[in-house]
Length: 497
Ligand code: NAD
Image (cartoon, rainbow, N blue to C red; front, side, top):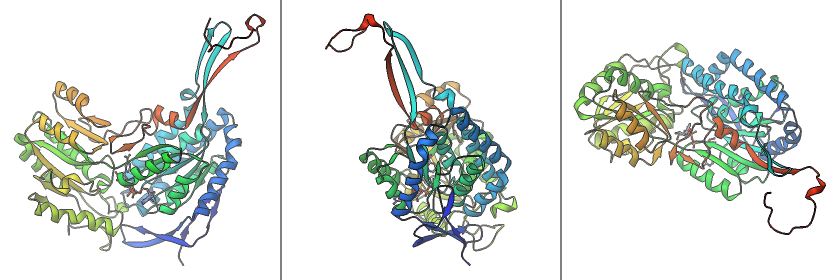
């Protein structure tokens, strides 16, 4: 009998209209393992209504109590990482160790949420004018919407809802329909941690559910992570409806390898950042810009490391798992024909490679393409798979020019032993997150995450201080307690004395 993944509304599983549903695969087996309900507009309305009902009580819950829920959630999540990792591996395909790493990075944000009082305590100026004090409060915005992508089914929701909840908001989360179980698992764990029902609701589905959130007048903000075209749509629609929006989009991350770099370190980094999670990371390195004089040696080192990688079922201790769906796997593999047609050379071809897993899984082993022209779609598109492109450049200047000409500006890295070159790069590059001899520069939770250009729409990055700002609105109070010496009429604009 088909097992359905239900919505989670007001602290209970809800089938909703149940007219439409979608497949949830096990990508390592290539089989449909469950189906997920797709929410109708009425289902989303019910979730928003639950969140709206829960809002006044949660907003007025003391900071100490809200913090206690977060601490408990942190404890439960840390203790049950293995359980969640198994869910991620079964629906997304990433190997278990990588799934555990994703959860660890999400946990960092839960820990940050426990520090909420320090980030939201406001400011106070005494006696700004005689007998008058001014102070600012940060208050929750209300019901907030979160829409997340398939590639980090636990970490991306965890970038947002812990901060939203800790600051007193209530939430409707719409996870990716491709791997939706993690979101429900997290919501149930929060209930176990003592979160009142209705504070975190999960609705599943596609554009219908997303549009219902974007147009719902009660939803005050949207946090979105996904591909650039959808991020643009989300930003335009939600801002037109008067909501505050942070919409994080796609990426094409470059790694610039200068001749003085430690080539072994750089080759390790390129392989780890290119093929971890089968390249389905928004911070994956997908294009290496190798300076010509060391490019042959660098490519050889990368190819040698790739020969040691194993691809297969993520539960079997392999290095890399399958792609998310058969369609996506075929689309990624299709770029390899384009690469050859565009004059690039296929150094390692992952098609048909040996795999430790079911033959029906969505497999494509690590692939290396050298001498990729920047005019090729292999270079220009976000492939989002285990395909590492090498573009040969004459030196720093050409490398920088290529990176800065990209429409994307999520992450980038420079590999060099020259401090001056690194410092110049961090200053000149038009990218939001920069690594210096670090390939995946995802900031820790107390800094904020977000790209530039077509990798982020809106000016609010995720988590860190910017995350707390996004989920709170500032209120400035000017107060005077009765002092008879300040009475009297004066229609002029208030001035200070
Ligand atoms: P996606 O854009 O296809 O989907 C993201 C979310 O939008 C999902 O919840 C999906 O159901 C919804 N959606 C899809 N089509 C829609 C439509 N037409 N209208 C309204 N909603 C729609 O992205 P994905 O394939 O799930 O995730 C991969 C993408 O996410 C990549 O482009 C990757 O770079 C990006 N990503 C970016 C970051 C970042 O921090 N910038 C992080 C992770 C992933």
